[in-house]
Image 1 (cartoon, rainbow, N blue to C red):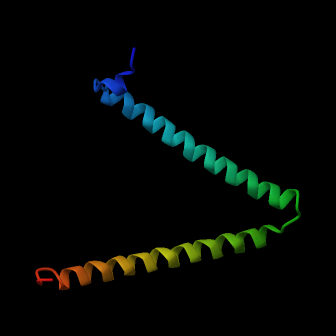
Image 2: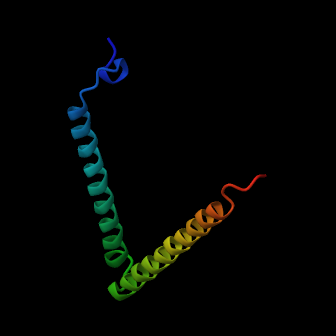
Length: 89
């Protein structure tokens, strides 16, 4: 017998709860894994906490720059698209 997901008889509430639970579990496991990696770097490899903080702040700054560059690219793309909209090819 096929699952309700395949027959089109979805229980939207139940699927929504399961998807939310799966999402929260994934977020929790990801944060726990990152915490374990930081602990291992500090404790096992004697990396100073200040250096880990510096690496985190540098990573956050680079990620912010990438997000800003992507936003500017999208803005330029949308602007050019609006500029050339309605012109015959």
